[in-house]
Image 1 (cartoon, rainbow, N blue to C red):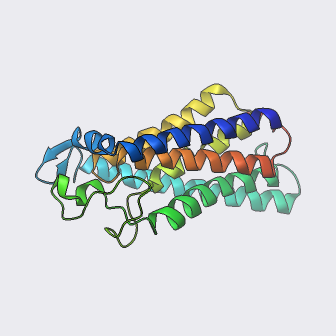
Image 2 (image 1 turned 180 degrees about the horizontal axis):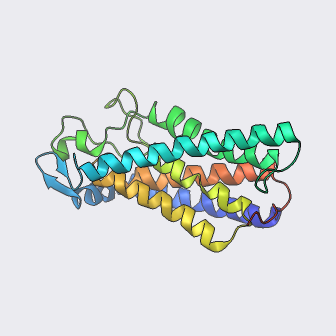
Length: 225
């Protein structure tokens, strides 16, 4: 597994580097993607839509319930000193860290709170007052909870941890990655994120999950199905 995991980490880093070069060299990609979803007058496809509000509430509720359930599972494994739902304490810790480190620390604490990138709806190009800045350019256009990277997407991409615990079944891996992209696209539809915010949310989260797997799950996990 270590050789395969090493290749997966290397492939993720390589993809991230290529994507970073592309978005830095051609920031117009972000603008073009946002413009395709822009209706004019500072409105995007789902700006202010009840669907967007409900979807945001659902994703946040799912996130809270998921973390709470994992925490309860961890406590039960420690109290009972045996696996719960096929997972031992080490795997519960791994899953909690996939979300806590990936979405909580990397996406939110490191990037969103320090990068200063204005959201699409805040920029001059889309009816706002802030200046657009390319990905990876630290700016002063947003004081906190900024655009780069997408926190909601990071949590969704973090579900990759479940796929790894479940034995790396291709359909689970694809479902986790697809979930992250769907959540990210939903945020783009409201003018809350640029395409690169979503892409690098995925890169950083997937890389975090793979590194945590190497640190915490040295042997192939059992099939929990």
